Length: 521
Image (tube, rainbow, N blue to C red; front, side, top):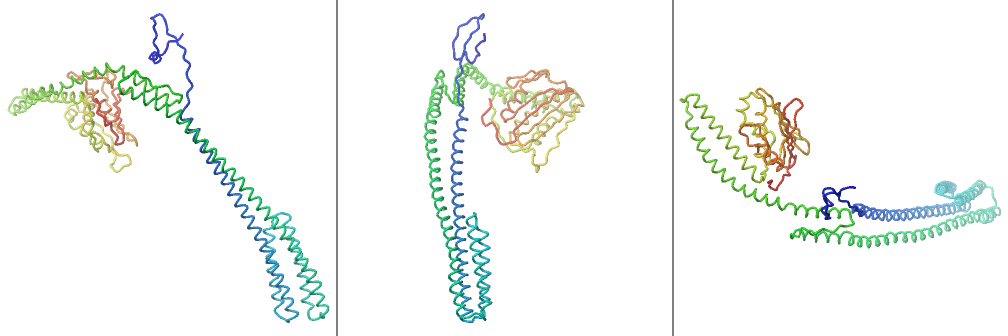
């Protein structure tokens, strides 16, 4: 048998006695994490984007590939036409040699031969597939046969007769070799035209598929948008409206109104937090009454302090006037004792006023070094009297990356360090050592005050209104005041015992300009 936890007892009312244990079986309702839903939503959009990008990349790749193939086929057609043109020019040079007796015809013929061979080298480089390579090889072989026959005619020019020349040029060359070469050219062009037609069909098919694939992500995006709208309205907008209504009811004073329990994990946590806040507000009403009473009592403190300070000031002034060198040593010592006692009472009165009233820091730009030295200055007489050695840290240069410049309330922090060092002096023996250390990080300052005294007989409580004191005339509010100031300055105050005796006090302050802007009560 297990007892129901106190948090569950706030939701249920049970009647039990001390010998019985309340039992309850609660089945937790499964919650959905808003973070996971948003993650799924974002992943869906990312997948859509990737799908669109992939389809676009495929389309671009196919188009680029088709364009390159089309350019390659066009180049082959262009090179084949160049060989045909140069072949006609070679025929012309052969006729010029026979009929016009052109002595430069043979050189021009050879130049065209070299040009055609270059075209065939280019054709062999760009030809792809067995059919293309075979057609180019056949075309090249036909051209070589043509060159062999026509070169022979150049060599026979002086010895050939008219009838034989006519037979050679008309029958053998034009009707035989040239027509054979034209046939090979026609076959090659037909092959290239078929490839171009096939390429055009592939391009149309790829465009049709790309359009289909592009419409698919668009449809998915519309569906996702509709789903997102429905999801947001049902799972987020309506629950938030319920939570908003609950906060309005609670702010209006209806603390018994409960925020609805939602399916979304984060909204359920928010509802739970609001309900817990309402419960705490209910339970804090008595604390609020007590706080108001304390505030009323705090209004009397300034009047009492005023009535105390005026006679103290008169007593101190009178003691200072009476303190003449002609008086005997015992009288002068008594007068100085009166002055010291009045100063101590004045400090206690000021600390009491500062502690009981809300603190609102007045930050300025200063340095840790200036604050520490300002706190140590009024303690020099006590330090000298007990021959105590104060070891200060090696203060960083102002141009260093991490220097001791700080944005804080210098006077409040000085008063804290003054009180803490004063406690350390009072707890230390004569000729002792009190060490002050400073560590600087990018986010905080860590100031330590280390003494070798007898240690603290108690553990300071940050929430206590006063602390135990070991001093004869101590008020016990120095340490609570230090806690309050550190909290107002956005820092922390910690006390710990040292291994070899003594106390280590650590003050942690933020290394930034952010302070608690609200007054700390």
